[in-house]
Amino acid sequence: MDKLLVEGGAPLSGSVKVSGAKNAALPLMAAAILADGPLTLTNIPKLGDLRTMGKLLKHMGGEVNLYPESGDGYLEEGVLDMSRLANPEAPHELVKTMRASALVLGPLLARFGQAKVSLPGGCAIGVRPIDMHLKALAAMGAEFDLTGGDVVAKAPKDGLVGVDLRFDSVTVTGTENVMMAAVLAKGRTVIRNAAREPEVSDTARALVAMGAKISGIDSDELIIDGVDSLKAASHSIMPDRVEAGTLLAAVAMAGGRATLKGAKLNDLAVVMGKFTEAGVFLRAENGDLTIEAHRGLLSAVNVTTGPYPGFPTDMQAQFLALMCTSKGTSIITETIFENRFMHVAELKRLGADVTLEGRTAVVKGVERLSGAPMTASDLRASASLLLAAMAAKGTSEISRVYHLDRGYDRLDDKLNSLGAKIKRVKAS
Image 1 (cartoon, helix red, strand yellow):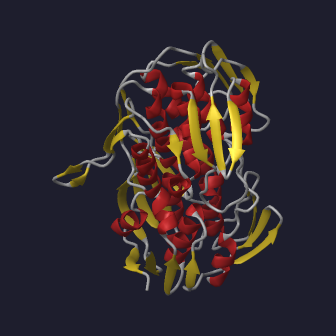
Image 2 (spheres, rainbow, N blue to C red):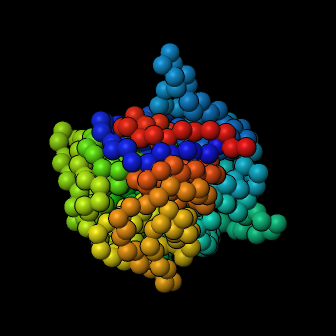
């Protein structure tokens, strides 16, 4: 197991490319189950969660060539062919670390009429049930047996049928799961109160390229007319807006000037607005985003997380870390997950002044953080600890960074290319 040694205080400069989005790549890999031929994906990030999903698809009998090698290392592309899938099962040992494994349920039911999927794991940031997935799929005719931690599902003999449904609350993976099930269902499915996250739209556009009939993309009402089959296709994964936001926070905390290559600015609008409000200089030019910030001169800003187009919960920990060294007091409110402040206790080890009040964090900026040993508890928390360590005085040690590798494509290498002083070592 690796850990990171971080020498703080180094300003950042240069340019770095934003990788493909984890939260788009995972449902796209699940979507390969629906096609009669291979799905070719480009701009694939190199992540632990994608390796896990690849192992799962191989376990089912699929052919997965996720990270082919070239003379310069791995290529950001992969080919997934699930046309000869023979084992529609997602066992616990393969899905225990990844909640996105639930995304195979809808595609398996739609194409093969059956599935056995272990209830998923992932980050310990709160209860994330799949009851809305199951309720919607049941309305389409599926039958479920929940036993021994597994969801055993079966579609009607003639296949799933289209329905008009409304989610009680916005669910990203629920929208994706039902949308993928609906593309091969009989008749029309309408998903109301659908998630509008860009990653949902990216999956929808890939499905359209495969032959699906989906309208209302980018809105909260998706209309899907079922087709008999999907074909082979190619799709380039959208840039990762959370990685881009994390890199923005890194430069803002450490100070300096850097350019993000390939960031999709429209998807970052609300995040960019909060950075600008805090006093960070941002300039968009030719599709790139340049950030300039002076450490210790930023102002406190209040943030409340919410479904897209609101402030993303996946950026809450990183922005909270930024506020720890800003001038004044900021209020950070988390509305999505009930247990997503586990990074706060670790940030306090660096000298951060943060008080938790239920789902709200009151952050009083301090002049400087000081290096200390810390332990990562989840994916985004690990990023916030790394950013804080880079801005702190002295050396910090961050343990359990496998969380970081699950969702960030070599983030420590990217930050080092900008001038950070991060060393990856094997934990004793």
